[in-house]
Image 1 (cartoon, rainbow, N blue to C red):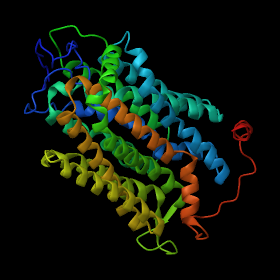
Image 2: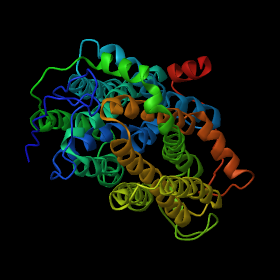
Image 3: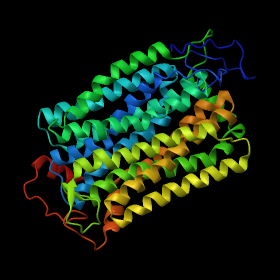
Image 4: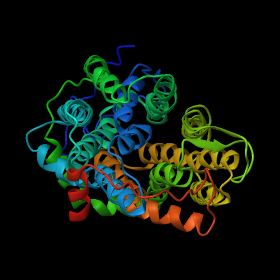
Length: 438
């Protein structure tokens, strides 16, 4: 399971040579090679950090005493800083590549994520600080880490073949599952909120070690990643037009993924949820159990299962590609729309459907890029594809999500669904000042 790959001494007709991290797939992959299963842990761990936008952010919101639509919008914009920095880092990392190879970028991402996790753990939970800029800093660094990591990691492992990649990408929803189901269950029975951050931070060194010992190796020194990216841009006519539909699909998929969390938290906005009845039902269960045992498992199941489906589909016919993308788009939009019913049971089914569409887009895109984008251009293709997703993610995870929730609720307000809360009159002064400055 070491995953070591010896790359050939020749390239695909370009003057770019392979390096120890496959620089965007510049090496020939053995498409039928056995998957390196353990690399899923590397992908999963960084997405445990990404899961800060889920249950940990909700717990952090309560820790800071955030209430009301205006304050919630300010907090959500601070959390959405994750998406802004993730987006910017897709581009800015090219500067790092002048001196750092892609494998080094992966190591750097793990380090940045560690710092991002320790800020709320030490400053907000540990020292009792309430400044909203700490949320922006923490989530901003988390976005930097994922922005550095995702596209680069996928290109780095390209030489290990499609079997490894189609398995590894399931680590993303599994990372969310660990935080939002397993840890959330422990949280419900007494685990302190701060453990969300300490646990994920403790997992990062092990993930780095696994990556170090299982990443592909090469026999020749490569040009740096900056040169490879510029090379792809100079030859963008060979690959960029083919990627445009996949950029659009990635935007939609990430929008529904990121919008799902704040939409959930701002519609089912009390500590209990009517279940299995409608919004006016008198039978309720704890919100923490609803999310941990139903909503998040449904989300993770949809996103995980769908990422494996493309492995069994043929993309040889372009008509099939567009048909699959259209189907995924309809799943995303249709699933998201079902949340407007405000029925908790249906909302779980809705997140399964929407995230099945998102995961389907992810798996299809990865397969398409490896099958139809020339090896020397995959690094650029993956990172620009992720960039398109970041734009959608920011749109779905910002204060716009609070407005969407407000629109979904309309004039429908119940005791436990779309409940109208009174504004707290004694918010921490530092937080009040920060919100006023936003």
